Length: 451
Image (cartoon, rainbow, N blue to C red; front, top):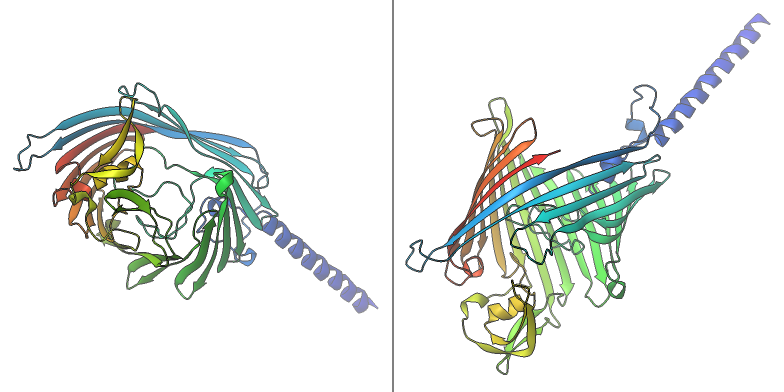
């Protein structure tokens, strides 16, 4: 009898222990912190079995964080004469720009975020850029399984550094020149459904314009050591686009790439038809676009990632095979174009060069004009001092043989005080993409703080 009672007691203890373990696993699953994941659409979610209990979970609290930066900028541009002498036109501009970030954290993974940008340019008499909302969105989720973000936001959609042919969502592309201020967001609803660590589904509904509602979807997965995704995009009055992207590492080299394909193109091109310049789109033609990036970091002594190198290539099936800017002939336009000049006055043009027609109709997309491009980035971290970073970058329009060489030295100390000195050299054939305004040098000095 004593043994029977002892077995019953042991059975109850084991059962109670299992129930406690089960309850702990459910609680651990409910307390998964998804902040880092939700701020980046390319992140993955850790499975519950990989989470280690490190003690009691702190009670969620509401919080409001305020941060940002302020940057003062001075630009000086000097253009060469055709004989190579620095006797051409010159220009000086200066302004100050500030970004204020508001981050409101609520319970259950709900949060709100806003990026407000203020700018003062003493020569901007119209005050057109004084105030702008770069991002403003709300995050929420359904039982930590489906995550949503609604509002104006910048999405990470594509893997290459400069050219993202699979990204037709963001309204502002990446830039080769140093970006001052924040990137402009697009308005819509983003959804993310993770399945463990290997699969993710992303969706976005573009609601910038009621007359052109669009959407995109992506299925991301991992095979071996390669992460890849298939995606599709469509917007009312546009042609659908399918895309593929991947990232992997081979022999210490990070390789990222993406490609997009559409039947007919969504980009308006220009041509001369019966003596008139007009717009058109390619009909009955497949239009491919692709980019690939090779990156490698090198250690030096005990300094990790001392040197960083990146090479990226871009093929633009919608680009021009010839150099439009080299044609200096005057053509009649198919219709008069109203253009707001720098003084705030409006002028009307009925004729001009191909370059004029592109610019007046807002058809010029920098770094996407021609068929073939390449860019090289080189970075030296902790250059001479731990606060200094040296950069040397080169972009090339291979089709028209023009280049921009950028060199820079940036300083950031432990007190979040920053300085920057950049030099941009426009090189190559006359009247090409990067020398359309002349061969010259731009010097840019920045000073600012982070807070």
